[in-house]
Amino acid sequence: MIRSRGWPTDLDVASLIANGFQPYAFRDFVFKIHQRCNLACDYCYVYTMGDSSWRDRPMAMAPEVVRAAAQRIAEHAETHRLDEVRVILHGGEPLMVGREGLRATVSELRSAIAGGARLRVAIQTNGVLLDERMLDLLGEEGVEVGVSLDGAPADNDRHRRYADGRGSAAAVERALALLSSERYRPNFAGILSAVDPETDPVGTYEALIRYRPPVIDFLLPHANWNRPPARPGPSLTPYGDWLISVFDRWYDAPVRETGIRILDEILNLVLGGASRSEHVGLSPVTVVVVESDGSIEQVDTLRASYPGAGETGLHVATDSFDDALRHPGVVARQLGVRALAAECLSCPIHRLCGAGHYPHRYSFGSGFLNRSVYCDDLSRIIAHVQSRVAIDLERLSVVG
Image (cartoon, rainbow, N blue to C red; front, side, top):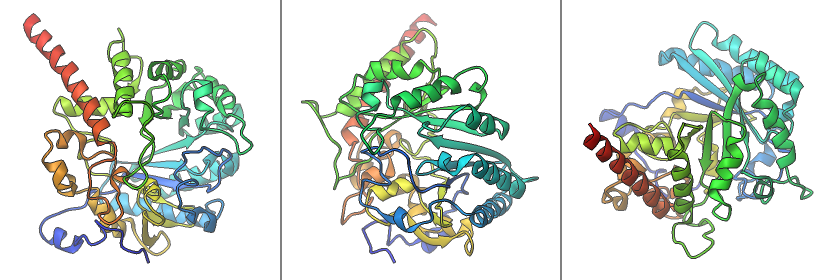
């Protein structure tokens, strides 16, 4: 049993449903197929932020757990008449299950979901084990491959290191050189990179686009009001400033070089569209996690808030994903504007910001009913994008 840590543990889901709220079906299913990792990144929310539940779980997801979870996905897709579902193989480091483990997992998924929704399978890896044999397998199985890299070698190796202190950049760059080649490029999903305001933002961006990724996912480091992010230097908004520098370099390029997920989403919102990301905007979150022991959990980044924050008490062997849709923590991330704190509702950009990434709102006592700990940074980058877009629209109207 999880001790109450504030909102939304007391959310009255039954009342919400009785008054017309309809949960949104899950479409993304994160499989924690391997609990351990071959790197020791110093900012990892799994191993460095106080939640040690990984120690009590199986190292790898057993075949019977994969089978049960795959059948639950098929059941969920049929119930909600979904045309497509995506399974993201995750960890720890998912490639540590080996080639045959990956093949068996994908085969089980395809067998269970065959004839129903279209299945997309992706993997998020640190890239260290990504060689030609592994890429051949992933290519054969049609698995989309995302790789984590934090920019230039020296910048990456400040945080993403082996346990003995060696940097990982050389191994990851070898993997990315292969993945971005013509042979393997069809399976290249993109690069995930943590924002570090002590690095050169333009230099980081340019180090990553050397591999021609279809998208770069810049993520703010996991932090909250009890564990605030580092703010080096005199600026009160170092993360917003960093993103502004990247935005200007990216936006002013003569041709589109890649997508940048958070900036694309802010542009969509500024232009009146909807967000497809849980980091900004108010779109409902439709992702759920299956741990290596079969436990059904909310987004695993919640464990950066406090131990057990993502737990639902459900298991694929006995419970459906529809049961998880009625969990207060899941409902809270689908409520849109009704999940915002009063201080957010009074802000003119609350529908664009959406209070930021849900785990970044946590404060002991009030729970997740707060503005983001990155509120000022998000306000700064959003205002900058609004200004740039307004200038360009005005210029176009004059020309027209």
